[in-house]
Structure formats: structure tokens, C-alpha cells
Length: 143
Image (cartoon, rainbow, N blue to C red; front, side):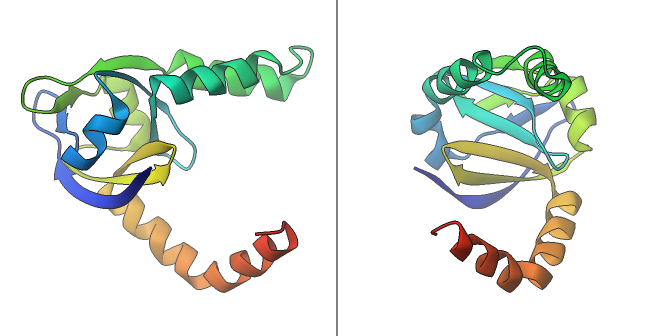
């Protein structure tokens, strides 16, 4: 399970050290793509294939389904760790997430998210205000 949050920096060449705790679960090759909330989603290959199969079953006659599939797949790139445990984040993904130097890498169960540190801090501050309300809503979903 991918959990926890880690602070890192991206170097001038766009390389980012993936936390050691995530490397084994992500495997040698994994997918990085545009995520929601202006972050990047990182999927182990088996999780990516599961998501891909679910997205294939969406009705292509629905504009929202087409838009989401385009958004996710057009931004996707296959990444491999180098010997130092780094990945190269393409510029289009860094731009999407507003990443310039300081990042937060968080584990979200079956995926990892990469955030610009300022974006993550703002998100956490906003979420903390409504955390109790969110929790109450989840009770209605059986959680």
C-alpha cells in the first residue's frame, strides 16, 4: 500500500527522486500522468492496466467520458527509475502541476500523487477546514 508524504525537490533537468518506500511497489516501470486538482498521478503498471480497462468500458458517445479519457491518456508517460532512484518528469506534466522546484510526493493507497509544495499546502489548509463535513458525507456512503 502506498501511504505517507515526502518532501523533495526537482533538479534543473526535471529529475525527481522517488521516495524509497514507494519504489518497490511502483516497480521498475510505471505511469505518470495528469491528475486532478493540479497534481500528477503515478500508477504502478498493474493499477494502470486496471484503470485502462475500466476506462475502455466507458461509453464513447458521452462527451465527458471522451474528455476524461483524452485528458488522462494524452498526458501519460512511462517512467523508469535511474540508478539514483530518480524519474524524469516531462515539462508538460511539470507545467500541469505547477512544479518548479519543491514538491510533495504522497501515497494514496493504489497510486502516488506528485504536487507542487505550495499547491499541496493550500489544498491541505482548505481540506482541513471541511474535513469533518467530508467525513460526515462519507458515512452516508458506508465508510
